Structures are given as C-alpha cells and as structure tokens.
Image (tube, rainbow, N blue to C red; front, side, top):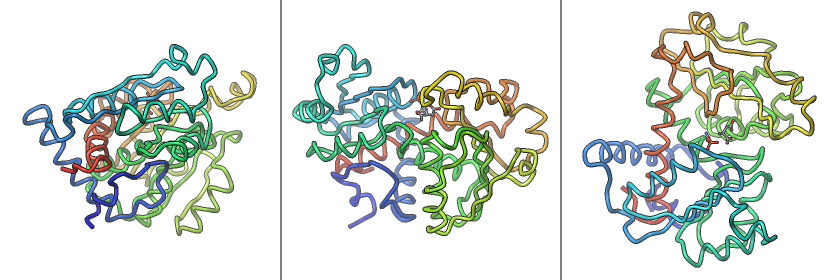
Length: 313
Ligand code: ASP
Ligand code: CP
C-alpha cells in the first residue's frame, strides 16, 4: 500500500498516525495539485463526489478553502456554514446531523466549538470525517498546510527551531503543529502570556515523543535564532469572561523591529485571522509567509481530499 492509499476512507481527526512517509507523499501530491491549478485551474479527479462542509463556528479560510479545493477537483459541496439556519437550531444532535449528511455526501468536514466533537461525529458516521477544528483540541489540516509551508519556505523540516508565540493554551493549530514537528527532531520554543501557556499534559506528551521544548518569558530571548516564528491570536471565544481575556490579550506584537532581528533565512507564519499580533508593515517583508500559507492550504487540502476519497494525484 502506498502512503497515499493509507489515507483512503480514513477519518482525519488529529495528527495521530501520520508519519514522515505519509507526509512526504501528501506534500508531493500537494505540489502536483499546485501545478494542476497553475496550469489549468483544476482537474476532474473527484467528479461526481460530494463534500458536506459543516461549520458550527466562524471560519473564512478553512471553510472557503475546502469549497475551493473540492471545486477544483471537480466535485461539489453542500455548504452548512450557518448552522443556525439548519435543523441544529431546532435541537438536532451532532450525531443525527452527520448521519443525515452522510446520506448525501462522500466526506464530511466538521468545525465545532467542543473538543472531541470530531470523534463523536466519526463514531456516528460511516463516511470519513475531517476535523476542521474542534474547540481547543486539534486542527489537523491546518497543521498539514503549516508543515508544507515550512518545507516550501525553508527547504527542509529537520532540525528547525520553531517559536510558537501567543495563545498556546487554546490554540488548536499550535497543538496539532507541535505534534507533527515532533517527527522532525527540532526544537520548539514557547512564548505566551502566563494565562495561556502550553498545557502541561501536552508538553509531557510531546516530551514522550522526543520533542525538545523550552518556555521563554519574551520573544526577545529567542527571536535571533528562530527559523520559524509562528504567531497566534489570543482565542477570545474560549475565555469564560471578558476580564480573563483582557488579562491575556495585547502583551505581544511582531513589528519591523522584531523582524530586523530575525535570520535572513527564516519565516513568519500565522494561521490567521490576526487581530493586531503582527503589524501590517511586516507583510512586505519576504519572510512574511502567512498569505502564501493560505494559498498552500488549498493544494494540501486538494491532496488530502483526493487521497481520502481514493483518487490521489
Ligand atoms: N483560524 C484558526 C483556528 O480556527 C486560528 C484562529 O482562529 O486563531 O483555529
Ligand atoms: N486558519 C483558520 O482556520 O482560519 P479560519 O478560522 O478563518 O478558518
């Protein structure tokens, strides 16, 4: 079985089970998808296949990226991005909702505010579920596109020093990314407001996987030898009160002075949306990779959808 065949019919709930071989194969496929899109806009690999895009939380990128990816593969999409206009607002359970959608679709992409929701959906459904973010849990397709972006920006994944800045407690993207980085033997540095530190159980789990980790009081301590600066926003919607959010918010900002201290060959990433953590003046620096990261998401999700639906490129 090739590495892409391994994905056929699988749920993608987190990063577990992905290894370097699967990732290499997926990234090679993403590069082929990029060529296809650049040369002719798309392909009909998934003609006749249907994706249900079920979003219980706001999204700009992930939601529209899955629509674009499926469309460029020749498939079609059932978009449910406003669950309040669906029967969810009548009290229908997640389980019943996915069992209904799988009657119409071949794959379900789910974003939900509760950690573990993707697993509940996968247990209820026979068709593959792709987790597009489950509360503060995981966001595996973001981690895939993040890793692909690092590889394309820096030309390697092994032995990098990656600084994760921001809300490391609630940030699902950093949870998933750190797990994948553990496969490549680098160092990860954590810089966060005190209230939103990387959770201890996750730090212990990553230690068990051999990831070298350290925590730092400020970005100043680590910025000069960072290869990848991965910035995140404080996840306002995860706080119990405005007061608690206010305590964690606004204590860091990446600006041109920060960037001036970075290595020539390094990159700045952000899953977006940003709400002030990166000064817009930074956008013109060639190390600012966050909009290339957005574009890469489409090639990676095209590769993933084609593999999960059994027609890899
Ligand atoms: N868009 C990412 C997520 O949904 C990051 C964020 O919202 O800050 O997890
Ligand atoms: N990166 C990301 O998940 O963005 P959205 O929340 O806009 O989907």
